Image (cartoon, rainbow, N blue to C red; front, top):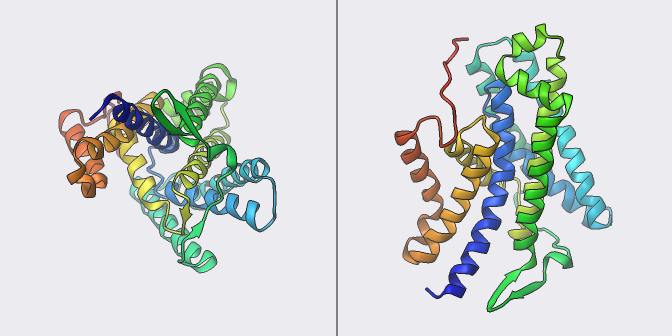
Length: 298
């Protein structure tokens, strides 16, 4: 493999890893506070894709307006799911909430099939993401450069929000102990809603970027990205935001490099994520940056 080809694959791997990192953060933020795996996260990003597509194609909105509106609608959708499906079970055994999350996931998949139909639909890609840029001998689609730039900016903003704002500090306090945070005067229900809103907004941004990278969407399109991003969050250490970012980049670059160096194994590309997950769990069950915590019986 030439240096040019290797650089090309690195760009592709970083772009894919950025998408995994964005979506994985939603999983890790919710788990960090509620100790809940939100299995409907993949369907939330699917919803963002359809919101954005209909905004552009059906309502003829300019794409920046349609994409921003889709992110806001998806954030509100994520908050609504939390209030209707998870909040009533706040004091129920943890397995009940987990089953509720799986039920919401299947409900949204089948609702999508009824409303949108099973036939894949083309997702519009704006011209600025469709240009081919030349960096020396390396040719890169502009979308693959914009994705890491947007991801880094969003992650810097999220890190500032969590560490410097009162709401962010309340989120960190709630992630340590919900009951103690409530006794300290923190509105825990409000903090959980904000967490779902931010996680869903990041998933929406990642989903829209995913749809532009692979411009064919259908109601089950969020299933595999959602599953892989869950794996990325576990690999990095679920509940840990930097861990989710690290897991996303490891998974994205690893997938691309597997196909680049061993093209005969390209059919096993998706299996790479599961093999990586098994190795990480065997070597470090809490993930690369995860902290060991005592399991509390519900």
